[in-house]
Structure formats: C-alpha cells, structure tokens
Amino acid sequence: MTSVGFRAFAVVVALVFQCAAANSETFTFAVGDWPPFTSRDAPGFGMHAQKVTETFRAAGHDVRFEFLPWLRSFEMTRHGTLPATFSWIFEKERAEDFIYPETPIALASFVYFYRKDRFPAGLQALSFEEVAARGLTVVGIPGYWYQAPLEKAGVLFQAVPEEEQAWNMLARGRADLYIEIDRVGRAHSRAVLDDAAESIAMSEPIRVYPLYILFSKTHPDGARMKNIWDAQADPARISSAGPAIR
Image (cartoon, rainbow, N blue to C red; front, side):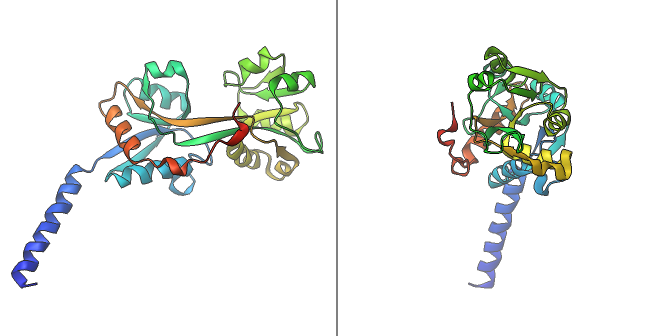
C-alpha cells in the first residue's frame, strides 16, 4: 500500500470510529441491592448487571446503574424519571405502566429453605397444599407472590418486614420454611447468619419464574432501550426451566 493509500485508509477508519462514537449513548438503569444479581460491591455490580452491560455494549452503548431502594427504583421508572429498572417478575398489571421485553434477563428458581435438623432426610418440592397438610409454617415477606396462594392453601404464614428477620426466625426454629430464590438465598443466608448458615439446606425448585427488565412507557428512551435489549440479548444464556415449573 502506498503512503497516500495508507493515509486514505487511516482517514476512513477514523471516520468509522467517529461515527460509532457519535451514535454511542449511555443508558441509566435503576436497581436495588439484590446479591448476587445486583450489588454495589460485586464485580460488575452483580450477575444481572454484567449481562445488561455486555448486551448494551454489544450494540455500541454504555450503561450506568443507579442504586436505589426497590420501591423508589420502581416508581421512578414508572413515572419516567429513569428509563428502566431490573430485575422483576412478570405481573400482568405492571404492563399498564411498563414495557416488558421479549427476552427475560434470567430465570429465578424459588425453593424452600429449611433447617437440616428439622428435615434430616431432606425436603421435597412440596405443593402448598402438602405444606398445609403437614402443618408446616412458612415465614416470608408480606405482599410477595407466595403469600396469597399459601394462605389460600391453609398454610400458616408468618409475615415479617425484612429478609433478615425471616432468616433469623428460620435459624432459631421459629418457622419451618422460608421461600426464596436459590442463589439469592444462599448468598443472603451467609451474610445474615454467618457460620450458622451451614445448618440451612434447600429443596428442589417449587416455582421457576422469568425475571425481566421493566422499561418505562413514559421515558423517551424506554421503548428504544427495549428494542436494543431484545435485538442483542442472547436467549441461549438463559438456562432451561426444566420440570420444576408448576
């Protein structure tokens, strides 16, 4: 290649990079602290944050994460102050205020956590009716997806305002079961109970739900971010639900 040709090639390459930089944007996501999925202290801000970062970078964009209380993240996205928030279970009524993408960010496997000495032979993925028939008590957070079906099945549901209280009640034998996502529960039990977490085991999944990014209907970037996500997100990275879905 002649010097003139090389200079022309260099100019073309520079122009390409300039165009790419000009089209690159930085999108903000509202998130709460939910180890290991989202966390200020985790590498890449957690597993789900890493996937969002990689997906938008593949489209030539950057992202930033604004850590907020969960309710504030939800409301700021709903009102259009911020364009998106993750990770959330699908609820039909939310579709009035948010755009759901085609591709979930991950699948969440909910399990029963229990004391090993309470069920030394382990515990199957019991239905809520079976939990009621065995007279087992479940501690949990009021308003979560499991409260209404547990109470409908006749299970004694012990409501506590925070996860830390639920773990302590379980560890002290004041409740038989606690329902949580497997990975979240393993991380949180260690954080709350320290060495006592070794006394806690978990069942096979009782429910498997997809988790989604909620994109704002009122923020001007919401629909465009949803399209970027669906165009770039790799469904193959989302594990199979298997037979645990009920």
